[in-house]
Amino acid sequence: MSGVSAGSRSGTRQTHLTGAVRVAPMHSNTALDTREGRSMALNREQKRLLQRQGELDADGQPIRQRRQPPAQRQREERTKPAQFAREVRSELRKVAWPTRSDTINYAIVVILTLVVMTTFVAALDWVFSTFVLKLFET
Image (cartoon, rainbow, N blue to C red):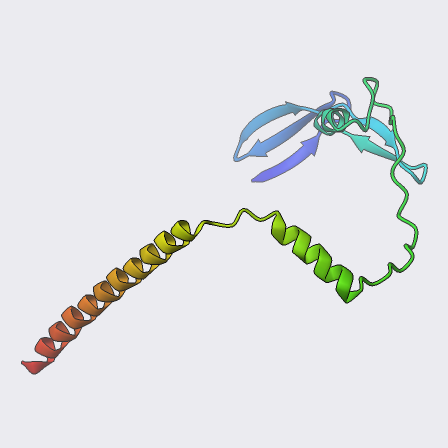
């Protein structure tokens, strides 16, 4: 038998769990005026979060207005191909390119890794194929 009942006079919430009763205090609510003029109930946790975010002052009153939705932006001009090429070139100048020796070293590491992993997979393939052939021979 589980259920929740709220005490009307005592300001507490009672939770019944298989005969045991746990009494939890009700959270005090504050109201926040929204953009439309309606109020929204906030518990302590929500109020503290909004205060940390700068939405509420110490008294729980809103301190700044919500942002208005952005107006329709005018369509931006397209970048011409020559301008695009200049921008790409200027960005590529900012790249920290590896030296020739770094590139050679990286290529050697990649090739060695490729050879080692290919050898490993081939060896596993040979071992398992030998095992399966011997298993079905008998």
